[in-house]
Image 1: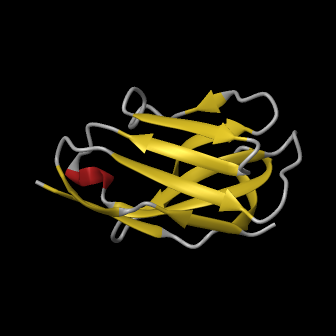
Image 2: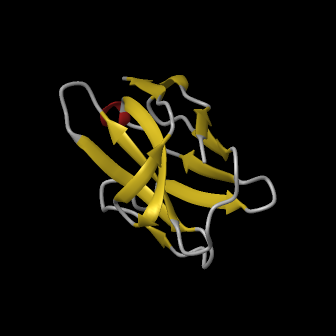
Length: 117
């Protein structure tokens, strides 16, 4: 499976963006698909995860209430709706998939999100 992420861009504080991740093949129902970001000079951090089969989601406190992850099984796609964006959300965002949350085996290329103040 290969992943293709898109949807990044330059926005202002308070704006919204929707990232998309399309898979070249099917995910196993037990797999988890997540969005991980890496800001300038920072470590990679998970910002959202969804269980492909059950649809259960996880968010860290830093984005809870602002970010929403969803999936479209038919389109083999995962989306990240980001609202009320802040400058600290500026990062390269990667979609990734694997057997459990945080244990990602497949990574897509990143998409840059820049939030200006």
